[in-house]
Image (tube, rainbow, N blue to C red; front, top):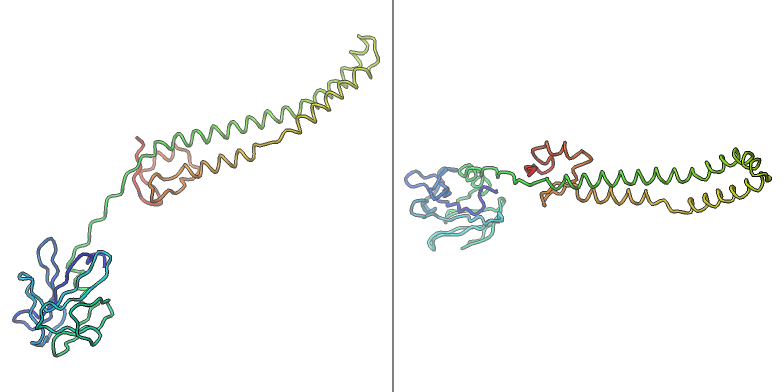
Amino acid sequence: MDRLKGKNILIGKEPGQGRLLLSVAVEGHPRQAVVQSAVPDSVSRCMPLENVAHCKIAVDNSGLMRLYNLKSQNVTYVDGMEIESKAINANSKVALGKDHFPISISTILNAAKQLVPQAAAAMPEEFSIAHLEKVWDEYESTLENIQLKQQKANKMRMLPIMIGSLSAVASPVIATVAAVESLYITVPIAAISFLMYFVIYQRKDTSLDEKKEANKRFVTDYVCPNPNCRHFMGNQHYQILSQSTKCPYCGAKFATK
């Protein structure tokens, strides 16, 4: 039906032949087709060049159809009722003239579609994906910083254990040199190690939340720039994405500048 949107289909008797003729104007020139034969004289002639016909079907830009009786002396019926104009569909029962000559709306529509060339496919729009390089770099940088923070936190957690272990070995030597009981050295170091351990483990590890937030931003921003698509481009590196010529989801062309 898209081909017929905005078109008028003239319908009437073919002059001198007695067949049902329809006509559709394409780029200002009428195109014609014959769909039925043995049309009675009560059906008015169709002469496209003079814009004369028994009736016409007007298709609006949304695809809705309306049938018009074009002359007061003509008679046109829809579902058994005489009309001047009436909304119809492909299943409406339409008859022309006082002889109630039946016509098939679906047959007329199919024939009219053949007269109208299919519109050429629109060229896909082009969108720049250059900004996605920054999105990717920021995502990678954020993940690296989170990983470094985790590594630093792990080292800090090991520090009290290392100090405690070292004190167990070094305390006797230090006690001998300082001429004091090793207990006076071991106990303070153990207390310091425990305090450090307690303080370090009291710190909340936010790395998981930070990673979730980074992933959320990435999925929201690393998308097709076509506003009608906005599909996530996946976890493929920008260097790989920049080699793509179009979006795999909407077909929009990609440009890297």
